[in-house]
Image (cartoon, rainbow, N blue to C red; front, side, top):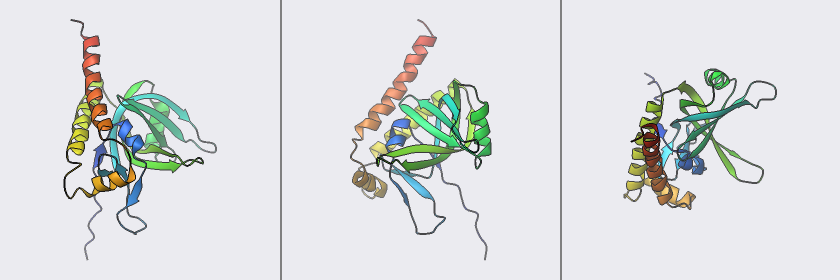
Length: 197
């Protein structure tokens, strides 16, 4: 009997605003090793995410061993990434990178319920790479496109994740449409600052 190698999940492009709203997680099966998915409010499941932004702050928050927290800002908000001994390459990237710098991160969404019952969302990075402003700008454009596509197909019949998102979240989709548009506009603003007429 041949065993097929497990395929990696596609890393979803998502802006910070939507990512931080994605507090509901689920598994597709009862298998102990089944992937945990984060349910994006625009009706998509995400086991991995691809984010790009400005690394503005890093801090070793570990008590007994190194455990690095990074703060990554995109045009819509802030992602928090955490890496420790089980993500040695990501942890050393957080330790060594200068702030501010543009970074591209592929990682897994993680949720954590606080004592007061609110849910914090963070990224456990698989990889952290320093990138150029051009790469960041391209990510903003492509992430805006993906976000708007998800909003567009939200009402389609048979979109089970969208129906689930409707049940789990009481959030207007316009929030993500506006966020995507504002993110694109922020690129135009930067260009007009960099290239005076």
